[in-house]
Amino acid sequence: MTKLTMKRRSFIKTSAAAAGGLMIGGGLATPALASYPDRNIDVIIPTREGGGADRLFRAFTSLWKNHMNTNFEPGFFPGASGRVGYEVYMGKYKPDAYSLIFGNMGPEVLNWAVKAPSFNIDDYIYFNRVDTDPGCVFVGAESKFKTIDDIVSEGKKRTLNVGTSRLAHPASIGILALGEHTGAKFNLVPLSGGKNTVAGAVTLEMDFCVLTSGSVIKAADACRTMLVFNDKNVAGEKLDNAPTMNDYFGTKLPAMFSARAFGIHKAAVDAHPDRFEMLQKTGKKAFDDPGFKDAFLKSKGFWPYANYGGVKECAEFKSAMLEMGERFKPLLTGK
Image 1 (cartoon, one colour):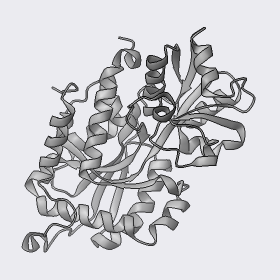
Image 2 (cartoon, rainbow, N blue to C red; image 1 turned 180 degrees about the vertical axis):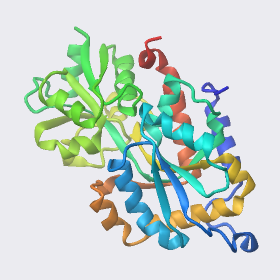
Image 3 (cartoon, helix red, strand yellow; image 1 turned 120 degrees about the horizontal axis):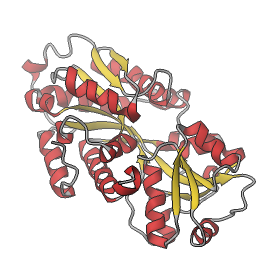
């Protein structure tokens, strides 16, 4: 049965142990690696073909394949906010390090708070994080709200309708945490996707919206950003130099990212630690490859959000999302 109430330190310790100490720079077991990989590596993508995850996957693996000397073969399993892809990966693919999943850690881990998966969440781990795209609060250009203080003040007078791409999303958690901290009242309205969420703000159908900031940057002419759920607004003027929640309100909210990373069966790590080390080592080389920036930009990525993370960073983020999901579960599920 899936456990969502584990303590953060224990979870991170477990994930680090699963990596077997095989962080980048360790020695490879040469004999065992002599034939690995001798075929393509399958990668499950739990979203539709042609979307942002697909573009980023192709950008990254266009370099990674040169360092691994093999191809990465995508398989698309959209549905249920990513749940279908994970169920397929964990239930039908062998834990032999010849199959991976390329997931969006933020919303997909939060999804487990809405409904527990059929597998134990400790049975897979993330590694090779490629990007981090923080959530933000934004309004349409014609909105009466000019600052985040205007939104909070109005939210103390009446319940504001907040558009979001889906309930179990880092940006959704961010605005719920802001309401908890300030006493403002917010009602989340899922609008099914980034384009609809931007439209909800621009048309003033919603009082304001929350979304990953990369999508807001692309619609900057029609929107104004009020707040960023990150330690720093690395996008600067592209997000209207909006303040961060922790700096402005004195909170200690973890960074609320959409963050794409590759995942692998823990059983594969345990059975084939040498293969896992090779995946980590070559993945880091692919990220550092001089050609990656150009590939990332061609995938329509915002370069300041390219952000590598290894096993430790991914485990910490996964743990934080599980904690936040459990904390705000009643507001995400209506229970």
